Length: 258
Image (cartoon, rainbow, N blue to C red):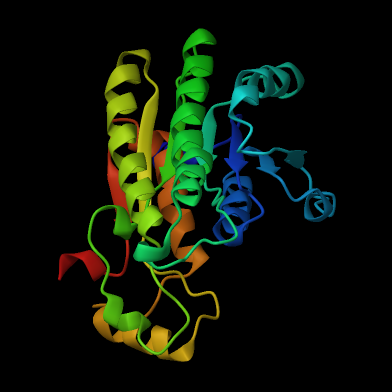
């Protein structure tokens, strides 16, 4: 293997994908596996997880909302699988009333969503970084933000659909991006890199009207796909990005440049 290919290889590394059974998480898990990593999928969906039967990829039941259990879970993973070199937070926890209009959001719902999504990402990032620091792992942590963590929404693309851009989503993703910069600085001296990937709209069989409007406003004239996200993840997970930390990599077909 030549030096350039070697820097992209994840051979000998263990990668954890939190939310690894989701739309994007599944593709990321496969991409990491193809880059020669040992992949641990953490997700709450045990029924789907049990169906995974591939070499060098394993499922572990994990509830991201149980914040107080992070240290014990990390200890358990290390004991069973050895050092964890890559940790990717892709999970998308939310309440059943997710998507209510701003003026209708209940205080209890807002607090709950911030707790299970923003607080979980932030505290899990801290605990994983502390784990890497303690075990002298020069690791890579990748959090998932969103274009709506850096710009405001265009509500016109949701006209005549049942869709919207939840207000809490904007606050949460913006918080994740800012906190990731903070911890990237905090742990940089330990050679622990923390970055963010902020996707634009990902096609998931949405309303045709929404898709058409979204694509018309995107310079590349299409929505993203989960496959569009995997290359950036492997890059940030690998030694090819060894001098990159605190970065928010926007993958949006040009949406945010207009």
